[in-house]
Each structure stands twice: as structure tokens, then as C-alpha cells.
Image 1 (cartoon, rainbow, N blue to C red):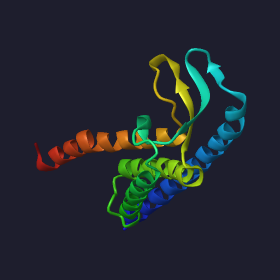
Image 2 (image 1 turned 180 degrees about the vertical axis):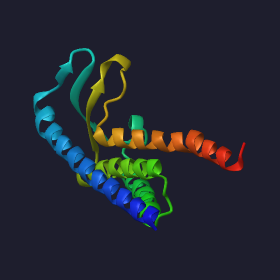
Image 3 (image 1 turned 120 degrees about the vertical axis):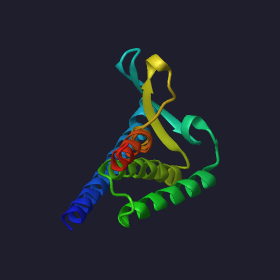
Length: 166
């Protein structure tokens, strides 16, 4: 019973954190839309980290360009499934609850852009690796997904091995 209470508390803290990340993501995107779009790039650390306004009409790495209906639909279904898994208690390990919450935050942040603007506002450019321009919501999705992969490939197999005595 104490564990259930602890799990529910973690869930609500993670969802509250997701709401804060969504708000921060939208605030920075609004700033980028208003300031960067009008005034051009800002070199935070020359030749390393630049802020630059870009409109992404596709998904990661600009795939599925101009497929807004498909992207909104798929994102909506995935986010709803993740939220149901969390709220119904089917996902219990703290790392997975945190990871799912990050993916939800990032997914909702980009979904808001797609629905309201028809594109996602990107603004972070990491120069040394010439990586595509991205945003805070993308970071949330990537970190959350990496944590899920870590759990599935490393942590869960170790826990299973310990339970079976192997």
C-alpha cells in the first residue's frame, strides 16, 4: 500500500514536471518566433552553440515534410497511449514513469506547434556536429526515449536475471 502511494506521488510529480516543460518549451518557442525570426541568429558560443529560427514542417530530421495530418494523428495516438499506461498504473518503475513523462512533454510541446502553426519551431543549433536545428521538446523526447531503451535493454534484463538467480 505504501508503494502504491509512493508510485502515485511520483506519477503526479512527473506529470507536473511535464506540464512545466511544456510551458517552458512554448515560452521559448514564442520568443524564438518573435525575436529570432525577426532579428536573425544569436551566437551563444561562436562555432559551438547558436540559436537560429527554423520552421520544421516534418518530423525528426525533417522527414515526412508537409504531412501535418499524419504527424498530428500518430503523435496524438502515441501520447494518449503513453498517458493511459501511466495513469492506469501499468508503468511502475520510476525510471520508466520519468521517461514516459519526458516523451509526453516533448510530444505535446511539438503537437501544440503543429496544430496551432502548422509547423514546429526549432531554434537550437549545435555547430560542431552540424546536427539539424532542434528545440526543447525534441530534447525531452530524445532523453525520454533513451531512458526507455536503457531500461528495456539494460536494467530490466539485469532485474530478471537477479530474480531467476542467474
